[in-house]
Length: 69
Image (cartoon, rainbow, N blue to C red):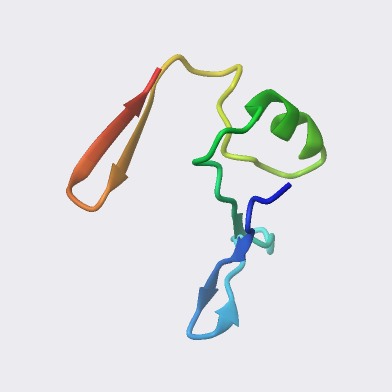
């Protein structure tokens, strides 16, 4: 899908959650059908996509705050 998944690592070792799950970051900044992505990720423990659960997302990048509605 051209999302360039990146594995979370610390000191060149795979980082795992408290429940021993792998974490991947995906590049979703370009034009993408986010609903289709959500459907394609069915079965993933957590996607970080808040399509049906919130009306506002606040994201911090460095000293900058970005909001999505």
